[in-house]
Amino acid sequence: MKLSMFPLLVVVVSLAIPAWAAERHMMQPRVPTDKLAEARALTSPLPSSPEIVEQGKGLYNGKGTCFNCHGQDGGGNGPLAAQLNPSPRNFQHHGFWRHRTEGEIFWVIKNGSVGTSMVGFGGQLTDEEIWSIIQYERGFAGAHGPGMMGRGEGMGPMMGPGGGMGGMGRDGGMDGMEHGGPRGGMDGCEGKGCPQSDSNQ
Figure 1 (tube, rainbow, N blue to C red):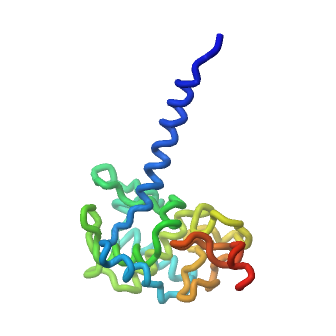
Figure 2 (spheres, helix red, strand yellow):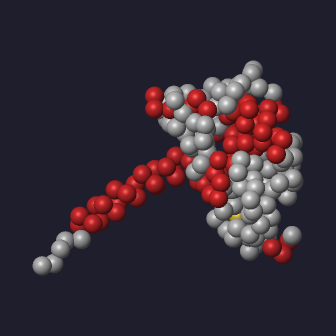
Figure 3 (tube, helix red, strand yellow):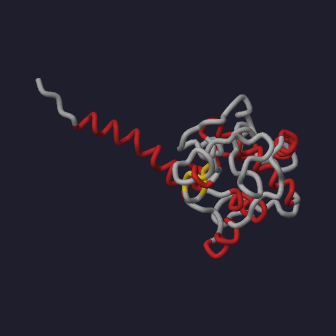
């Protein structure tokens, strides 16, 4: 008896839709359109280091109260997450780091995001504290972090929070504990390990 492919197609599509929706959600900027270019131009003045990551961790789970919405593991699953619409950002999702810049994240933490439950923390956190939180948050993506769309050479045992975070330095190069593999940016793969930039390194 020849079985219809329709039920199988329905299952495949129903499984694909949530993944597509999650990726689409990550592609939506939370910075107002008139501030987007300004936000994307912002870069961290801090070098990547275990000390700064540790400082960011303390602020994320303490003074910044980030864990309440984004979860202790950065998965967007904190104790308050279920009642928020739109849901909090999932820092474990590689699509988030592929589509959003650290400058955008800084802007949103400092100023908040209209149409979401994200309030601005500029009155509670210094700029340096915000940058250290971002450095910690980048580590949540682990092996799916920035630049992992390309070849992943250079990744070692430092892949916890703060490890394998290409592009955290001011010059986007290798600072402190960063790996030498490619990193993700708004234009895709950048840095060592990317075919279009190997000759420029």
